[in-house]
Length: 258
Image (tube, rainbow, N blue to C red; front, side):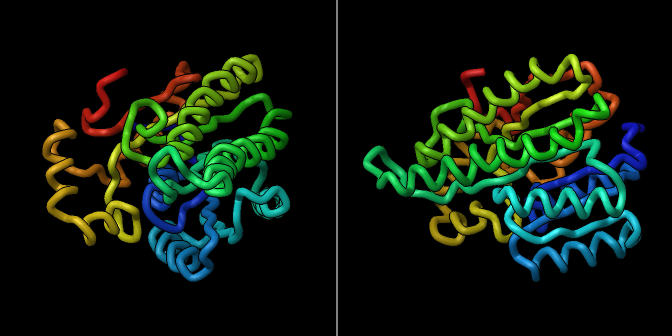
């Protein structure tokens, strides 16, 4: 299917591995000029070299740093503008789910997860919109989680932040619709990839994790980053031109409430 993403400028945050890297590859496969980012310079360099080898050096731009930081975001957007132009597509894949489970958590841990997931998503989106709105076109996809749409064992602050991101996307879509800028959200389930959290869970308690997958996920398997990446690319494309304000769940059927 032709998605109409050729020559579009796509900024994919958190794209040195996992869902972000697979998403960058999906955009490149569709002919986009793609910006990848990451905090770990070695991982980012490795990802950049692999993508440039596959799709050409002229279509890949790697920008290191923490895209939760406003100054870093401005520097990245400046580099993108110098090389190409303002982004046509933003994929806000930021944050972490690593935190203390249970209700009696230290306030600093609660604040850290809200900052890393919710505030960082807003900060990145706001800065990109300042470059995107003058053109009155664009697409934004925020990466949430099924932890934000249903009760799970995830840390409460992480779940609250992801739920807020779903709501943020819905309300932002209403504000930006008149400017022809679409905002959608994806809520992945259990996605397995090297270096990801599920790899660690499997290493520590393989039997219990596999039992959970067997009993809770109707498809009885983990998801793959590419399955989320293809969904993000579709939502960013002209093929999804009448879709905005949606949260699309991709979890193998695990959630029951929606």
